[in-house]
Amino acid sequence: MKLKRWHNIVIFLLTAFITFRLTTRPAPNHPYYAADLNYPLVIAHQGGDNLWPGNTMFAFQNAVNLGVDALEMDLHITSDGILVLIHDETVDRTTDGTGDVEAMTYEELQQFDAGYDWSMDGGATFPFRDQGITVPILEDVFAEFPYMRMTIELKKTNTSMTKPFCDLIRQYGMEDKVLVASFHDERIQEFRKECPEVATSSARQETTVFVLMTKAFLGGYFTPHFFSLQVPQESGGITVMTPSFVKAAHARNLAVEPWTINDEETMRKLIEWGVDGIITDRPDLMLEILGR
Image (cartoon, rainbow, N blue to C red; front, side):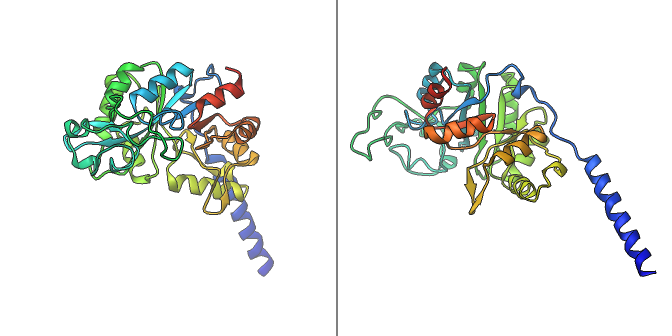
């Protein structure tokens, strides 16, 4: 009797296991990751923040001139509803001003020098001060570079940016050129609901689940609701980037785009592993490695 009960339990578990495996699905194809692109993608983090002041039109233009494949940028909103590009919640670190971005109007934000505090020699020199570099608006980037792919990170804001952001993407026909990222799961879920045609990467909890499942060799049972894994090399003492992680992600039709990689040795290793792109402050170095 006991043997029969265990037999039934095993049959049930095997049936559930097989059913679960057959009903999971990889990510569908998305035109953002077109087959004819030159992989791995060179993704200029903030436009190349180790070369010039990041998240500025100056940086984006110079990155485009270098020949990068995609621009990465950070999205905030002003008090008068203008979508602007700046990394932090405040202007303190990257400009000569102080205060919260979200508490300022766009006109107030334009008074600050976005190249003021950029230095690559520990503050000995500030080569981009007083060069007229300001905090840009997203619409200007869409208008200036409609042919470029862009990774746009939704930053933490009190006011939702989802609707105006989605409206702007559609207005400029950037649905196949934009990949939206965020550390905040609730923000990315909100965006997917409003703008389902636009590709997104995994948010924090989604990334954690997939990483842990791959560590347990269960990546094949994961159904992603995103198209890309933009991940650090390690997080919380756990090594994320490994050849097996890349293989598991590709098995679910997910692109792997590690950040923020700025040294030649690591770039070469990740390229050898078959990553789909690298987010870097040194796009010039990666382009040189790739011979482009």
